[in-house]
Amino acid sequence: MARRKIALIGGGQIGGTLAHLLAQRELGDVVLFDVVKDLPQGKMLDIFEAGPVDGYDCRLLGSNDPEDIRGAELIVVTAGLPRKPGMSRDDLITVNSKIIAGVSELIRDKAPDAIVILLTNPLDAMVTLCRKITGFPRNRIMGMAGVLDSGRFAAFIAAELGVSVQDVHALVLGGHGDEMVPLVRFANVSGIPVSVLLEQKFGTERAGEIMNELVDRTRRAGGEIVGLMKNSAFISPAFSALAMAEAVLCDRKRVLPVCALLEGEYGVDGYFVGVPCIVGASGIEKIIELELNDEERGMFEESVSHVKSLVDGLNL
Image (cartoon, rainbow, N blue to C red; front, side):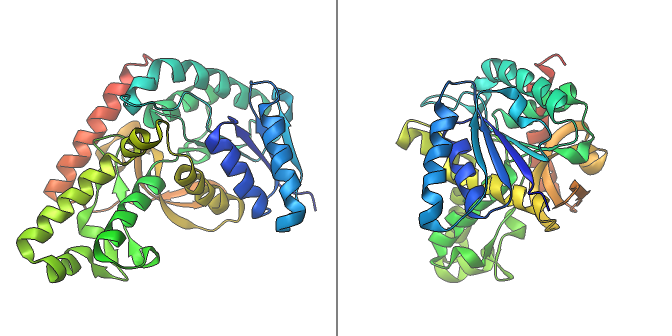
């Protein structure tokens, strides 16, 4: 039986890391496409040469030829300018919208049946642009943000409580920006509410302050890394994209927070927003609606308002 064809568009740090992760898991044959001459070829050769050492075996191709993505079943887009110190995700919209417009035309023409996962910032606007150009049904196009943001929230909670990250479950909704909505009420450690464990460790008053600090750090997490490395994160985004890709390729039916097109869910119509979804072989198979309380609803609506302002600025 022929192996699955996976195309990665964008040969930067995230694209190269994701290519390596996909190869290690042997999820299919991987094409890494980039417009920079020799860059994807060099990265894929490096990954290929590690195969005999690590024991993975799949076909790896680095390419500058758009024809090589033809027929891909899954496409992950990381192309675009990364954040630099002092920049917000929104600052990237002008340059990255031009890049994503070209990428979207390429996907539409070369891989019209693919499922697309997009990572380029500002995410919510770029996924909207990609969908507008490709015309793909909403189940076959999604953005990666919620998996990453929720993972960051969980990591910060685990560090604060001194527990394993494997036992922490957290959920972040809304747009991929400073207005994102970490759901404090749903965060738990093996089913135990995080708020309870914080109160036991720090007392009621201090527990609330610490949770607010964790929420704020989650919202600023991308900028924190940019400030330290002078460039965008790439390991955690690549692993987050891998979780989504694996859910599709292996039909995992995973419940993941992804940037999905809402058509009435959560009172939103016609905008891509981060919400929990069941992700499987056909892409987004179900959008899960949560009953938000008044405070959560207010934060969610504020986040959606920011998404709308970004998307409306594209004049699609």
